[in-house]
Length: 198
Ligand SMILES: CC(C)(COP(=O)(O)OP(=O)(O)OC[C@H]1O[C@@H](n2cnc3c(N)ncnc32)[C@H](O)[C@@H]1OP(=O)(O)O)[C@@H](O)C(=O)NCCC(=O)NCCS
Image (cartoon, rainbow, N blue to C red; front, side, top):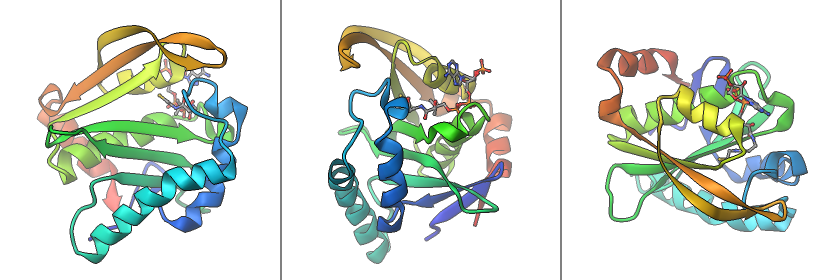
């Protein structure tokens, strides 16, 4: 079972305990959590969220099966410097449907890495997990996250008004979706050329 992939100068590897200090430092930042319904996190809060996920993935690998959760650490391919994390979570009762998530450290914003991370999730879900649908959501004001999904082909499917509380205010939640069948076969095969097992 493969644990790491590279593409576009980034390395995506299944998250382990060794990544937690970097993830914790990122999620303690006001800037990163500005549009999130959680955070800034304490170190303890981040560890208690990620450790059960890491445990589930590790147990699956030991048993020789695919994990239910796919939490990836994103690093620069050449230096190994921490860039962020991205993830695919299963949707209950909908086999092949996944929720996407991504957070990058603020020093790496606006270089195309957010789009690349989301593209990796699309590649992973539709080519390696045999997924048929991806789900994404964001606070209405989070233009960067919205653009990342749009650039990856996601379409706006709905708005839930004043759904989330972040930064002392209520925000609309934008719901995005992407079906595998939305993507032309050529686009899917290009994804396969972008990422390779490391
Ligand atoms: C959302 C996030 C992953 C975007 O990462 P990124 O690497 O900056 O994204 P990209 O460089 O690929 O840029 C994608 C688009 O967002 C735009 N963008 C990036 N940062 C922006 C900002 N602060 N304000 C407005 N637009 C922004 C880019 O211009 C680009 O748009 P374009 O296609 O119109 O040119 C990053 O900002 C982040 O981690 N934010 C904090 C956590 C978060 O909000 N996660 C998403 C939760 S739903």
